[in-house]
Image 1 (cartoon, one colour):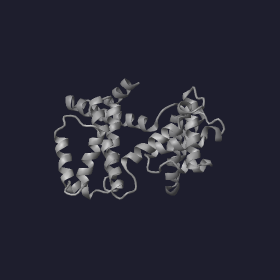
Image 2 (cartoon, one colour):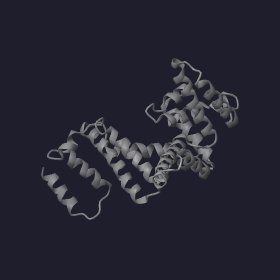
Image 3 (cartoon, one colour):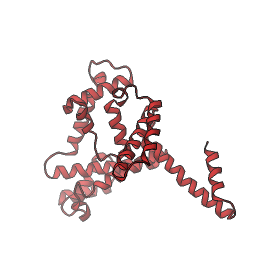
Image 4 (cartoon, helix red, strand yellow):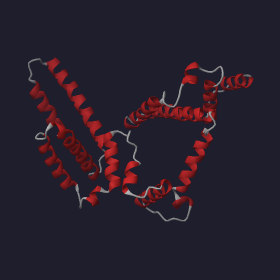
Length: 263
């Protein structure tokens, strides 16, 4: 307990902190006499926090807000330290082990920097990375690689990764953007004619084809859909504003004007 008091006093005397201080604070919060809330948490109880903090980092990146990015990266780092501290308490691994493992992984997967492998382009680097990763994880078949993609990823992102790792463009015979667009249109036409039991499968096919088309055009499905959703929200705001300014104007005319501006 005396050591904890000394650590608290040392922290309070500081005007600037570092990573070691963050780890010390977490030890204090989780330790005897620490914060009741922090002491009660488990990996599962703060699982959602990690997800939310990650999305807040993405928001800071998308809005190009460095102040917010700095704050949100700190929140993600806290989650890493929090989970590592829980594991250290039961003797399985520590934050130093986490740092050791990622350093070892980076060195091993960059043989063109830390070894004698030649890789002069980004494509060569990525090919090496995937080959080394597959060997590390003993992923031999295409199915092995597809099953390694986390199923809890957002569905569009997972579909994008599955399509890329499966090499669908080659497997389906030069399935280029033009053919994908044609297949997308065909799937859309059959959707309405499907019976209830088949409709979900047809709709899933439609979405997967849309993701494939985006990948072939160099677009990210999650990003594209997020931005389109933002535009739709902005459209409704513009509609309500226009109607408030002129109640006599037809909503259809407002939508037509909005569509014309977006072209």
